[in-house]
Image 1: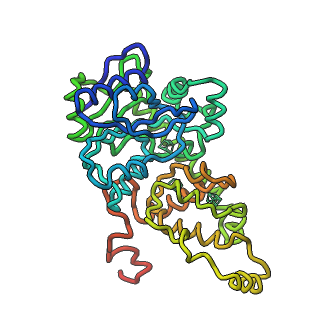
Image 2: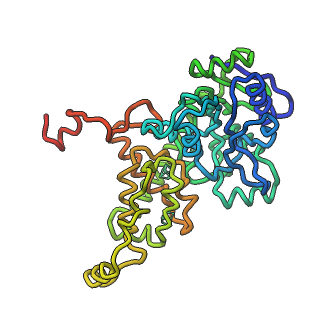
Image 3: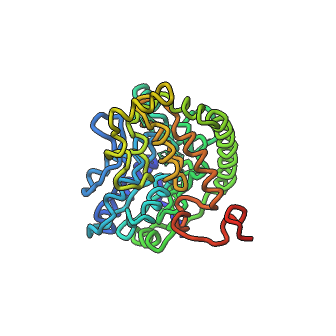
Length: 373
Ligand code: SF4
Ligand code: SF4
Ligand code: SF4
């Protein structure tokens, strides 16, 4: 079911706030998780909202993306809280959330997932500059993105410029913005019975998608696929030997930020945060004696290769690992390149209903490897 909200003339952000307030006032939900402007007047972070007045500080279409909220929403949902909560997520956050749900680290039972055509994000520094130069102009950003998402002048974060999954495919409620200037109102799809129920309870009128949306989305995905291929080719050339991998991660200080922010790095206790890698002093000397020298901190490559082996089937390409790296290493370019190949090999798509490839046995898989013809 597709419905729309009458435009209020105050813009789409204002119309979204009215809808969210209606959902709380009609007790369709007890709480909301929305991106909310922080007291520094710049940052926008996911926040759990229990009072309708707090919705005024929400910024739905900001290019600020400091954290993938899937991990936060998993913390709110892995056990029942008795609170029906609607959560506003980007497509890569929804896919990551679904991956966590498959590992019993999250549950959508008490949630309504609201997904959006993604307005992309700016790199952290670029976003700060953007805000300092222009004030709160996220609406301008979103309007430019949704009118012409392939425009190179937008210069989004690298992960967004190669993202081939920018649509709210797995949401209960999908908010469609591409090719919609807002003049005819917000267009929303109730994609599941839960989503349809919300539209019915809010008494929204039936609508249709703007005709220009489909060709615009097709062109966008084609452009992004080409950009991804070009990025993958470059990073493959930069990392196709152990020596080159060592160069790629040469400045790594083993801070594990890339693991901490990754929404699909799923181990409850990361082995790299245990004593396993606190070696005896003599061990370092033995390695140095053997190889002539060792980089300190040690185990850098081992850490990255282990992480790749654990989560490349589930990497959603959100780019948070790059954003969090104090050494400016473009971690996500390598991880998403490897991930794309792993996901292709297993015909697996993060965020799909399929079980993770490592959790199922298929006797017919890879006959050329296991020798079964
Ligand atoms: S990676 Fe894709 S879904 Fe995630 S913020 Fe960027 S464009 Fe949106
Ligand atoms: S590895 Fe990086 S790009 Fe992939 S899901 Fe984790 S944080 Fe996102
Ligand atoms: S965030 Fe950067 S410096 Fe820290 S462990 Fe990851 S790659 Fe290394």
